[in-house]
View 1 (tube, rainbow, N blue to C red):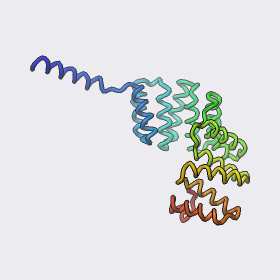
View 2: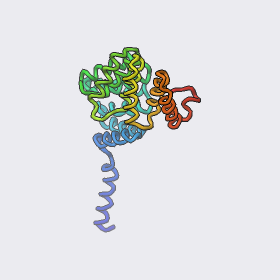
View 3: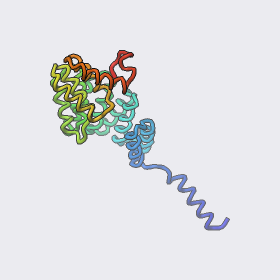
View 4: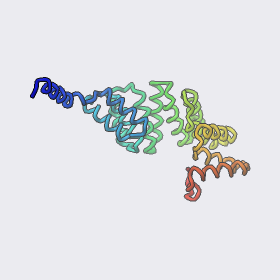
Length: 235
């Protein structure tokens, strides 16, 4: 075999053996891209590879825990986020994401506790305010829920329809109909196919005697989610 070809084959072999292995940094970058694109399984796989290379990197556990929570594996998420906190107790993202996993398990007291710690570590963490506000609303602390969701809206650089919708639901429960309708309307303006916001505005408008508005909203719910009323379930 000619010397040049031998050198080429040797170099190619080395590249195949060593060059294709991604670094933890590149794996976590890939995981974040996959996560944002909704490929949670792919994000988890990349994080697992990064953890095998460096099992002491808290960020890898945060990303894997976040992806596991999104994929519905609350227990796996909590395990990963526990480890992230053990490695670096001053990681607000770990507490914030663990609060989501607690919410999935129905443990809103723990969700509030973790969200509060995330806020203590990063007072501008709008996601932590959103999580705490949502859990406070579930537990009946409506004033605390409105305060947290209002702060989440103030801090978030991008309008989030879910913040407005959840605050609207809390206003509705407090009997503040005008404020509730305004928030549902804002949420719909941000997301035109937001069946949940249309549904709650429909219920409230019907209760207030605005039957034309209620009918228009119910039609939108049926358009977006045709089985919403026949199944007797909220969108």
